[in-house]
Length: 136
Image 1: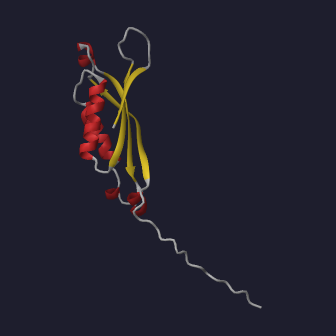
Image 2 (image 1 turned 90 degrees about the horizontal axis):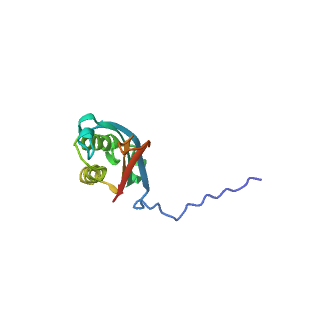
Image 3 (image 1 turned 90 degrees about the vertical axis):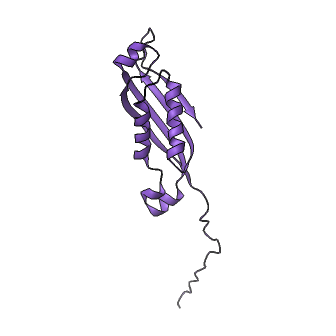
């Protein structure tokens, strides 16, 4: 006797409009820059680390495997680099400018967080770093 196999088609339709939210983490981007309140900091410079977290819908990029459908993290890096090259007195100002650039130049970003870390800050004591985080 032969067994009869019955194949049932699912009546459930794929929902192509459903979002697939994800986060891009670009961590510990290192820059030597001339930021700081004190004149000496603006002359001598210091090492800075920047972390950038970008939330975006990744569904289309995951399906197509096409960079044009994704938030391009090389462009994100270049935005951060550009802002790090512009002198500021406060880390808050740098972080705010980075977020402005992200939202102005990276369509598809729905939420972003940036942390700017100054290594070995001149604060009268030994410490690894001081940082500021902003998110929008």
